[in-house]
Image (cartoon, rainbow, N blue to C red; front, side, top):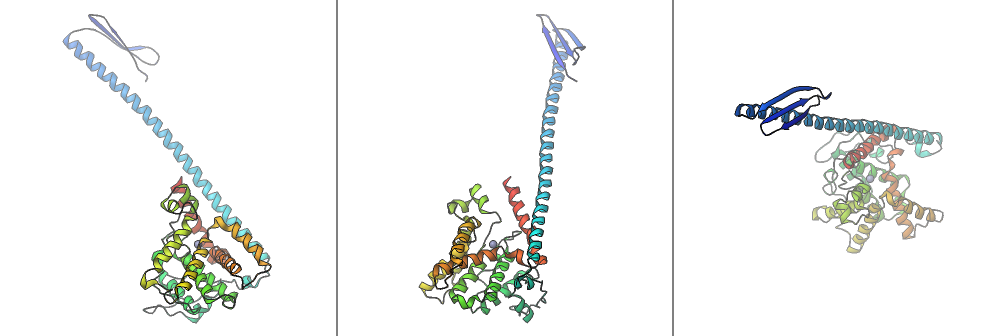
Amino acid sequence: MCVSVGLFCTSLNTNLSLLDSTGAMYVTLHTHVSADKEELFQNVLTQVAEQFSRAFKINELKTEVTNRLTMLEKRVELEGMKVVEIEKCRNDIKKLREEMVSRNNSNFLEDNKKLTPRRDVPSYPKYILSQQTIDALKKPAFDVWLWEDNEMLSCLEHMYHDLGLRWLVSCVSMTNYRNNPFHNFRHCFCVTQMMYSMIWLCSLQEKFTQVDILILMTAAVCHDLDHPGFNNTYQINARTELAVRYNDISPLENHHCAVAFQIFSQPDCNIFSNFDPEAFKQIRQGTITLILATDMARHGEILDSFKQKVDNFDYTDEEHITCLKMVLIKCCDISNEVRPMEVAEPWVDCLLEEYFMQVRVYS
Ligand SMILES: [Zn+2]
């Protein structure tokens, strides 16, 4: 009910009228100013004040409820859009896959059937890998989901040793990768295992020096170290500590490199200690160049440079070799989609989960 109050005072009398919304008078007080009457008058005034304050509170509550409803509606709408986007991504991937199968003229795809190597029984202090696993590791079809963190670590160690490289388990471990949905230790393992497969499939040891092989493998292991799960665009827009430190220039990739060489600078983690300072300089520069090349913002630039060289590729030209190494790590970084469908598929959800986690924080 809408209440209006009329107060008419003369020197001796007070008239108080309460009117409802239609203007009908439903309380009229005509009082002489005396102690009793004044008390009654005060009481009525207090009640009227309470009525007013209640009416205002109801209005405030109404506004709050309306605002909350609008917010909820927006969230429902956003969730709906997410589902549509996920479905669209899935369809795109399905189409791509069908297109690849229809062009089934590559040995690579024939070799791309899922392998199911036996899970090796761990034996302390490190796992002994079965011959089946050792062979499977050399192929892009390797099922990366079968393994626990410490088992992947043993596989990494095997790959390094198999290529004649020095590896210390303590240097780059799963603890240097955060538990992100996508950019985690398993992603590091995937990229490194794909690099190892490429080295074998393309007989790269015949074309590259041992230092180049070391650079390729080490850059793969370190390329996403301490990834926070938020991409460069987020870092730059949110003006994070990383973006400020690296002046908006590949903040994440610069951070991965810095973390890598902080680890290697510890005496018990220095896998390069048997190299002379000149060779170390070359390894450091080579590793940094490759990790920085994984910034997708530089994709066009790197690809253009490679296209210019590919027709007259010269393995004796340092610039050509560096460009090829950059393309190799880029391929390995986004290689999930060339793995068998059962291996590749879960990564799509991981990537989307990390993406939407970022969208939620940013919006
Ligand atoms: Zn990566």
